[in-house]
Image 1 (tube, rainbow, N blue to C red):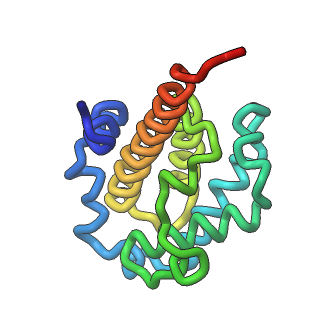
Image 2: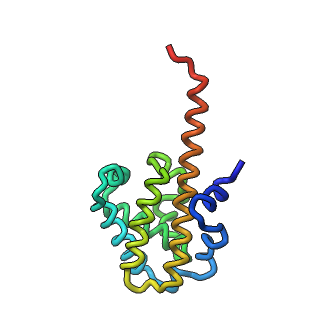
Image 3: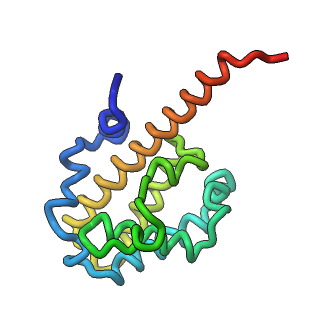
Length: 165
């Protein structure tokens, strides 16, 4: 059976070593806090304005401001900066935090579409950093898809033994 990381690499087309190339450079020191805030603001403006209701509905339980803060604090922490996210919310536990949401292949591709546009239109992110970040985002998105499928399988296996009256 494939691990979640192996599934993420297969589905994303991004090898694990490329996905974690973000660890070779301290992107927080290179880009600075404001760049991460700008990226997340740019991203969530696109998400909350998405023309697809099914996609917007995934984010309906959060305000745009909270979504922006959660994302940039996680990115800062994951890419070499202070542990802003963990100090405020505890361990990132990405699969657990995304568990309530339908993290499908289609949703991951839509998320990645908006992130690519946000990266391309956020000033002060050089091409090498964009490539490293997008590889990480793509791999991580499909890691979450794999986690979502595992959740759905475990729910199905619990129910197949249920007695229906």
